[in-house]
Length: 80
Image (cartoon, rainbow, N blue to C red):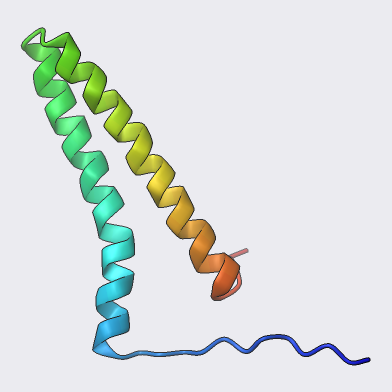
């Protein structure tokens, strides 16, 4: 029995470019927003808002890691 490796479809269309940008920019923007609002909340002693921003930062990092996993699970090989 021979096993065929699934071929990776390389689609360089505008739609794929927008999708890739969305996958990377949204978690990074979430992380930057959480850091900015977290710094503001800590400076103003709003500890509840600071706590929510810490949770949002963890969610952003988790989403970024999930997107990285999806990209290399179903896409190209990871960098060395």
